[in-house]
Length: 79
Image 1 (cartoon, one colour):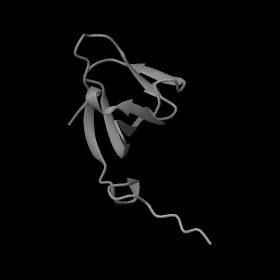
Image 2 (cartoon, rainbow, N blue to C red):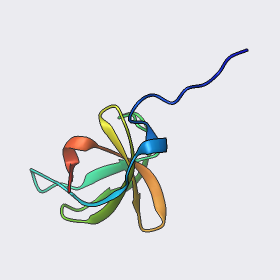
Image 3 (cartoon, one colour):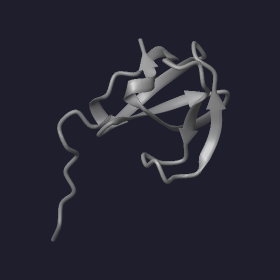
Image 4 (tube, rainbow, N blue to C red):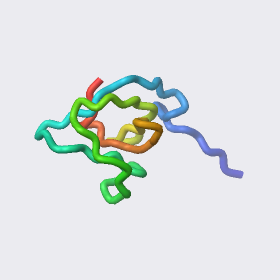
């Protein structure tokens, strides 16, 4: 019998918030299918694009943008 426990700070207790894409070098930032640099790209977002952060895992935020849900590195998100 295995019981799955959600880690502290997991999405079940995550409070979503509005944010913007941060692009320090002016390049577009990748929105990915999963929380991995090798994951497929859903879109490339311009700096200052409005997004909604709905979860977090490691160095990644789970985000929503234009009816799509994906992942972006936390260093490219500003609230």
